[in-house]
Each structure stands twice: as structure tokens, then as C-alpha cells.
Length: 409
Ligand SMILES: *Cc1c(COP(=O)(O)O)cnc(C)c1O
Image (cartoon, rainbow, N blue to C red; front, side, top):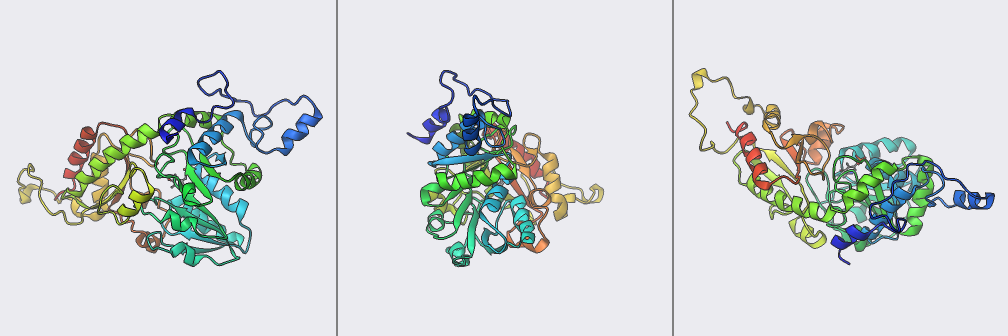
């Protein structure tokens, strides 16, 4: 079946006559005999034992995601970072080597820096350089290759087929910015597909979840560790995400279309220096995106121009003597000015929800990076990331236009 159908049907095996997913609040379940209790305790995927291990509502969500990803199994976590940290600690020990993409979501970057203290050694690979991951692998020592495709915040890609060809280490792809109706990393041969389901999968900014999909053996191994790690998903969030999943394909298709319009509009705007959107030919990974993604997705980034190239046609003539200095001349103020003027789009972190959100990566998602690290991944103080929502495109374009006026000199 098509993914558009799968999102509607998936994850319903444990709800024979209830159309909506039943919600199981209980943290624990009663056994009828010691024999049954022993069997449940020994099966970490058993949904009716203790909720840190699993839970029927969480299991339904896992089943749905596994089906969408084309995976044998999936494990849900209390957040995307819970998923990432569980995967790393389940697979790697002191002395092991990990290959990590340089262009990462800020918290993932910080996490990988942090774990060096446990004796894990890291090498960084630039997503945009073909073969970079495979070259960095040290045979026998590298236990994990960790990529984020598309990457935050510039939507950079790496070739999923090349990643899938890497033999030896487990290859994990954080595919948060391209949900399963857009991109299926496992179909390219990578071992684990990982999502912050807080974003597009749950899709309504009201649930925090992570999820990892892959072969049954690998997911069971991760589940075995994660039961001790403790970042287990809550049934409330799993339920919200199951509801969100049903509309995933229509939401993301619409967000992609609106993002395409907004990106094209911004690219022509004199107050904008550069736009990164996978649906624009100007994006360095445009061709690769067309090969491995069904749609460009709803996330774009743009940089406000240092020296706006033109006056807006309808701006009244200035009288220099009685005008205060325009704060937009100060690059540190330009993003602030723009953000303050936005009325429909809101200044908030996260992505994939119904509301259009704009973030300033330098001061939020990537605030933990050193100046040279920020420069290496192309994050300036003029850079803004947009998660396009479900508003009417005309209203959004009008909002961006009126806010961009503030930064034109
Ligand atoms: C948000 C995000 C995460 C972390 O997910 P949380 O649910 O916030 O813990 C990881 N990777 C990417 C790409 C993200 O956007």
C-alpha cells in the first residue's frame, strides 16, 4: 500500500473494535500466575507488564511507525534525545569510535561532545562531501555512524545509498526533518532510522517523543538497554502521536507546497541574502533530494542580507536629519527586528507542527556551539530557520513581506 494509506491503517492490531486507539494509563499489569509473570518479565517488548518496558498504547505507536518505515520493529522514547542517547549507549562502550556528522541539531552536537568523557572517540564527517562517512570509519573500532539527513538548520543531505553501503558499524540516520512519508532511510540499506517524533510525526506541538526503527534484532538490543536507561515513552504522548500520524502525509504535503512558495518568494526578496530549501535548484543538494525524498519538506532557512540591495517600492522618502539611525544597519539587530515584526509566524523552536515557527539557530538550537563550530556549519547571526505550518500561503507571504520591510534600509 501507499504510505498515504499506511498512515491511516497502521498500528491497530491491539484494538479489535475501537476505531480510535485505546489509551492505557496503567503503569503495571496483573499476572495470573508466576509462570505468566516470569514470561512477561523476560520479554522486554511485552506491552502488559510494566510501562518502562512497554505499554499497549506505546506499542501501537511503535507498530505504526515500523510499518511506515518498512522496518521489522521500532522502539519509542520519551524524546528524540532519549532515542539518540539510548542508541549510542546501547551500542557503544569506552574505547569505541563513532563517526558523527558535523552538521547536526544543536542538542545532538552537544550530546556527542559530552560523551567523550566516557572514553568514546569521535570523528566528524561533512555531510556534503561524498564518501566522507565511509572514509572516517576505522574498521573494527567504529561501532556507530550517526548522520542527520536533512541536517539542521540548512537542510543539507548526504547520500543515503552510500551510507547504506557502509559495512561494519551500525549506521543510524536522524531523519526528523523528513518523516517516513517523505524519506525512508531503511530502504537505502542503513540500519536505523531515528526521529524526534515531537516534530512532524506527532505534528501538533503537543507531544514529546522519539522513535527508532530497524531490524528486530537491533531494535530488541536497543530496547534491552533502554529499559534501564529509562527514557521510555509516555502513553499520553504515544496517543497524541498516533492521532497525529493519521494526517502526516497531508500535513507534510501541504507544508512542502507552502514552503516552496515561501522559499521562492524569499529568494527574490532584496532583504534576503540566501535561502536554503531543498525544493529550490539553488540548494546544493537539490538533485540528491529529488532522488531520495518524495517532497522537499516544510523546513527552510534563510539569511537576511547584510547590505539590502534595493529600497522597497512603497517606502516613503527618508528625511535624514529627523530620522533616528536605522537599527537594521546593525547585523545583530537585523534578525531581532525582523522577528519582532512578524505577526502570524511565531518565534518558537521546534518544527513540523501546524503553526509556522521561526527560530534563530544561533541563539537557540545551536547556542551551545563555539564560534568556530558555528562558522564551520554556516550558522550566522543573520540566519533564520522556518518551519512552515498549515496557514494559507498568501497570509504567510504577506506576513514575511511586512516584517522584511523592517530590515530594508
Ligand atoms: C528536535 C530534534 C531532536 C531532538 O528531539 P527532542 O524530541 O527535542 O528530544 C533531534 N534531532 C533533530 C533533527 C531534531 O530536530
